[in-house]
Image 1 (cartoon, rainbow, N blue to C red):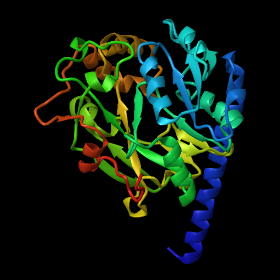
Image 2: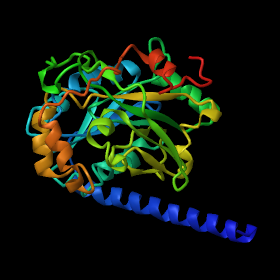
Image 3: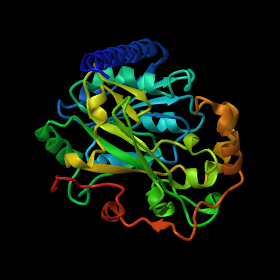
Length: 344
């Protein structure tokens, strides 16, 4: 390839990425019409508040600890979109003094799995703030968290001129059939789901978005062994110093502009974290039946019918080489996260 042709191709690729990002931002602007505000406390945000954004549906069991966990880490304000909950999720969130809440009955799938709704909130309220985007079943673990929080981490990232922080999603599970492990509301789910796969992950650099694709864990091992390309992506860019021109292209797996995705490059010395994924609480069996019927969680829902069927059979994800969760230092020893150059 000639130098001139390479330069032209790079320019064309950058142009296409800009237009893709603008389309996502336009979708976010349009998505605001689907949202109805229930509790707007955004005027209580401090200029340096770290914001947490999340789309939820029927998560009243997880939310008490979710809020406790992120308040301890240093989140200053939460922005939730409730997508048609039929339990007490909406009432619980509306009562929280540091929560702003919107509701919608629109299609989760048609809104790019809730990303369009959160894009609007990021445009409207997130500009200039560090924004953490997390599902109700994702609990962020960061280096030095026993004595440092998100404020310390983001201050260090700001000093380095780094606008984003990456985290690998780690599926947590119990020792035994998933539905037979009792969870008490308000407890740390990682006490019930205290095992994980410590090996078997693939890390693949993808040039299009400049990201590292990570796959593996118990879902690939048990449900997608014959078609690993269908296994869920585990890489995320959940924490970003937000600009109203930014957008997520695929959940929080990929962000635009591309430079935000350069968060798993060990050569940079940047720290990374872990999302403890607490999907496999005892309710997973009943939820799998419901979500298979709804068909709202995957682009090609038919590919995941067998996955939902097997989850509804109350499987055991634990095996003889499972690792017991012992904290962030253990995860770093296994190579799943790193403190990088952040001394904490």
